[in-house]
Image (tube, rainbow, N blue to C red; front, top):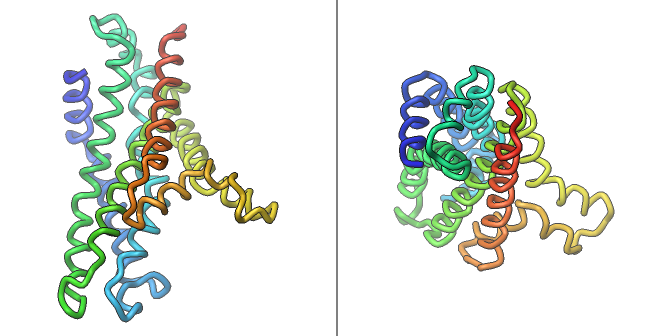
Length: 240
């Protein structure tokens, strides 16, 4: 598994894809945080990172599919997966190795956003006037959200040889699981319905408030585990 992890990280970092993708993510996030008037922290009148943590999940819906779309689809398209599959490693090691590699890239994309946190903190009056509990909770929520989206992306990449299809499927599933249940609940005028608890957004918002509930942790781990299990099942039933 560690060999696959190292191979995937080296492959991503040796190409421009990862740098361009992460660069665009940080640029767009910076525009939302500082430039666009509806979300700019400069227009709030107080130090707040709500726009950062509310915008990032939607940017993740494009960043993470761009990272994961090649993980297995490219292997199958180029015929290198047969070599990988016949090596002395299990399907779980393949899946987890690629999953952890993509998750590390997501973390790599999140690290520079700490500059935004520091900048907003310095703008506070007094300096450092930020709700540290909410900030830490939001980053934990983003990590769990990223892990879930990566698992979905790995699964989508396992069912096709086409990277564009893998990207599109990942975006659709991520958007549906994040916002679909909220929209469905609102459409049926069931705002207080338990149906919202099936959506990712409900659990992400709960963690972002700085309260770590085991139900939220179990939800993210369960969804991630489900898609990793589906990926392993797809690989186990391969006929290519």
